[in-house]
Length: 208
Image (cartoon, rainbow, N blue to C red; front, side):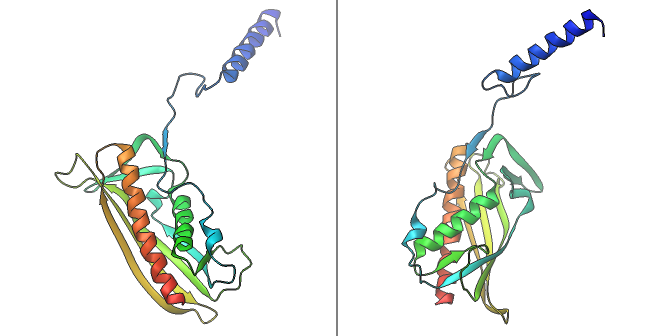
C-alpha cells in the first residue's frame, strides 16, 4: 500500500468515526428527520394488581391481527387505496399495544384475570382474538376528519374438550376531531377502549 493511499484511508476512517459520534446523526450521507411516535394505550400501570390472585383466570390464546396494521406504521385507507402516514409511527407495534391494552381492560373490569401462556396459572378457559380491521378510514367527503375503525372478534374456549363457550364481534368507529396525527391517535385510543372494554365485560361474564 502506498503512503498516499494509507493516509487517504486513515483520513476517511477519521471522517466516518467523527460522523458516527455526532449526537442525533441519523444518516451519514444525509439528514433524515426522526418519525413522531404515538400511542393509543396509556402508560403501564398497576391496574392488574387490583385483581385478586385467586380470581378466575382466562388464558390469552392466539391473537390474529390485520397484517397491514400489525406493525408500528399507522394504516390509512380511502376506498380501495391504502397507505401509511408519513413520518409517524406507533411507539410500539399496534399488535403489541393492543394486547397490553386488553390485559388492562380485563384488570379494570375486575374479578377475572387475563394471563399469558407463559404464566403458570391453572385455567380451563382460553380467549382467542381476531382483529381484522384496524385502520384510519377516509370516507367520501370526509377528508377533513377521518374515522378510525376497529373491529375485533373474540372466542372463548373451554379446555380440554375445546368447547366454545361463546363468541362475539365488537366494533367501534370514532371520528377524529381533526386531520392531524395527534387527533387520529386519540380516536384510536377511544375506539380501542370501547371494543376492549366490551370484550372484557363479555368474557368476564361468560367465565363467571
